[in-house]
Image (cartoon, rainbow, N blue to C red; front, top):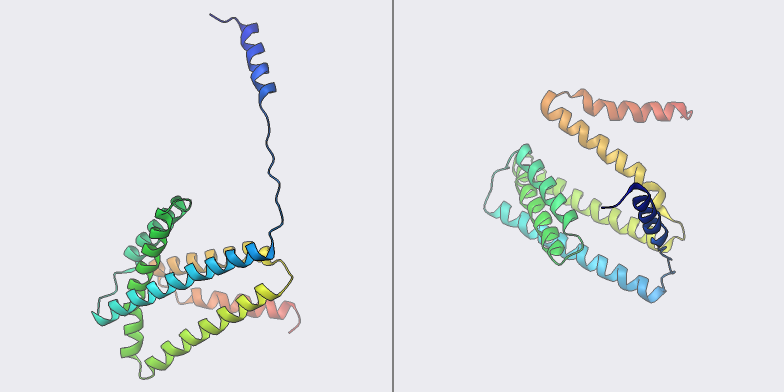
Length: 195
């Protein structure tokens, strides 16, 4: 049996024996950086192609839209699964499951635009082309610029969160004013800057 002074001594001894390890960050060479970027863009293109294939399957079979709750539960469930498995080989499979699910839920939406509007194909192709051009331009800017754009992370995360919460609020309350809030805040921002 230990007495109190022995416990204090063993605790102090274990505290003194604890070694702190610090990580040093080595600058990445250009070859290693290009390899990481090449692998990242290869994985991104494969997941986008898989999502497009799944959207095409959903469109071809005319699958109905599963509903907002199933989409939210499926999306966040697969997103958390991907985060949980990100350091294993199963993480790649969960990324493809996530993007495939997103494609399946996107197919009925594209079908709705194609068949409900007279210029539906133009709308879909404009959205596709605009997304591609913006992605290409932003990727080119980030790769060729010497600036660090990590400062935009918090701003973009908060903006996405606000838009997501407004969409959820609109599901339950069905307030068209939620769309007006964004336009009003943008107008007020411009007025404060004098323009």
